[in-house]
Image (cartoon, rainbow, N blue to C red; front, side):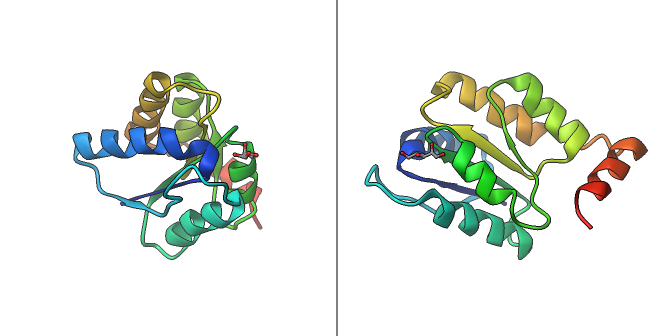
Length: 142
Ligand code: RB5
């Protein structure tokens, strides 16, 4: 199950992503927001991180205007490794190396075509499970 949320700056891109997940037959939960009316991105970041830390969802996708505020918020939560990606190389690398469990996107930064490729790359790339990466990840949190 994939947890998805956005603020107003990410709403249009979130709609594209939800359609794409549906087309792929992937299960998701949409935690809002539900329009382009201004909201506070930390509220929506926390909905997704809560779903992951509670074990209800394995991965999350968060979208705000830049992807920055929503990823900063998500990364304050123990057990969350949120990666702000603007290309497929970093989306692949953050799964292989960081075992990132949240993808952050900037709805005002990447167009829908690229964003959907980034989403696919992130969701389809497994963690490498290599010792050096496991060690480094374990050093992030104490
Ligand atoms: C909202 O205007 C904007 O600040 C927000 O979407 C995000 O870009 C914050 O980092």
